[in-house]
Image (cartoon, rainbow, N blue to C red; front, side, top):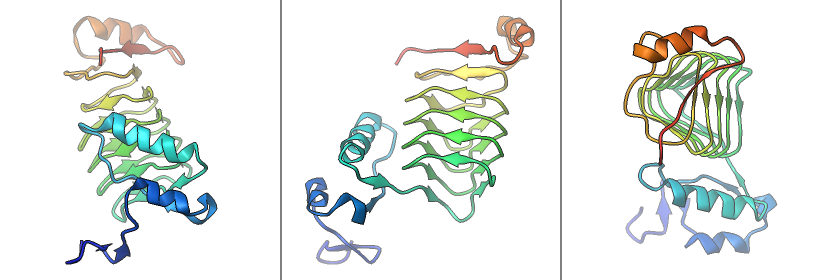
Length: 178
């Protein structure tokens, strides 16, 4: 902010969230500055509050990110520095793909998801709405909301037999409680 707190990076500060409502939704593009950790529910509330009133959240892509030409990014997706997103991937609204994450081909990432810095998703991985991917995820896996603590890969113990036996579109499910 400037010395008066009126500007941030040259952009005029309008006031609190409610100040936005004085402007027609068609004339406003928003960027959600609330991070996922530990404010996931607040970030989602703000996104839904304004989306339900017709406001649109911009897709923000850092210039050093590499995003395939056919990747689908819904409103409010934020792609940080050093990220790579390969072709055929879909990323749901209000998700954050954090610094240096790598998402390979044909992944489906739900709304309000956080892909942690440096996380790697192999091809055909599905991440459910409101989930965290804080680890490397190997195919075929479907990650549901929660906080997994370990890598899940076809080479890991008893899950290996399940993963090897799974065929498309059937996938190994990994779930953890919130």
